[in-house]
Length: 221
Image (cartoon, rainbow, N blue to C red; front, side):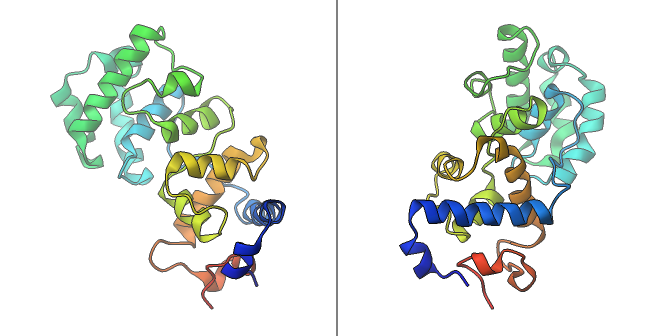
């Protein structure tokens, strides 16, 4: 059983080996792990991801069919009436800020990138409403470019696992990236998010049924 004292004594190599063992268990536990936002194009994915801030994927998936029917392209969204857009996305919360970001994102994509969602992190993070987390979601799931999606589940779990003590999402991303091969980053992101939603909950983690318990210093018998 791994304890916090063990984690404190771990060498970088030992931590990498433990993290990768846990990664293999996650892969076996969640072979079907995937992005749970519904999308058919990079434009749909970036739009859905912006909407998912402080909102469940299930709620976003109930809103996006009508949204994409009304605004099927970045050009259409760029020309959206803010009030009409707000009425469509209201149930996702923070709808005024999200509407501004969506219209701003679409206008920037239309004006700077010829209507195509950019394919690099540096370009993606120049879009309104898009930070590294959203950019990595789009890169990994729309373009097949490996990336780590550090959402609240991801950050909570990797700290509980003792992979890092960092709290800043960018520092967390870099710390975990150093533990795993780049090819595994997108898959690992999904697996951690699924595990956080299904077992390693924020307030009452189900440690008794967790397949990672023996390797996790936060295990509660």
